[in-house]
Amino acid sequence: MHSSGVARIETSAGGVIVRWQGEIPHVLLIRDGYRQWGFPKG
Figure 1 (cartoon, rainbow, N blue to C red):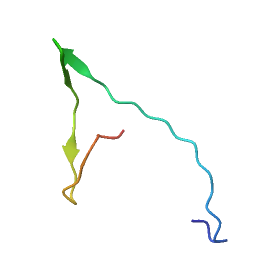
Figure 2 (figure 1 turned 60 degrees about the horizontal axis):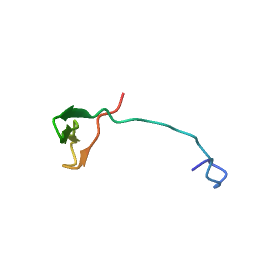
Figure 3 (figure 1 turned 135 degrees about the vertical axis):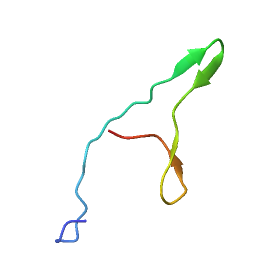
Figure 4 (figure 1 turned 180 degrees about the vertical axis):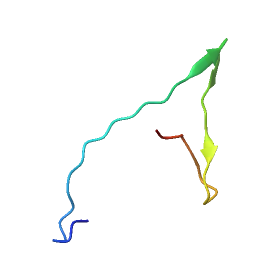
């Protein structure tokens, strides 16, 4: 939140790379320091 108390609107985009081996999709997941699963960023 901004210091004025009003949330600003942001636009973002991303993507996930999928590698197919036959009919099986493979994606990369990471486990963060809070033990939550997610996609790598950057």
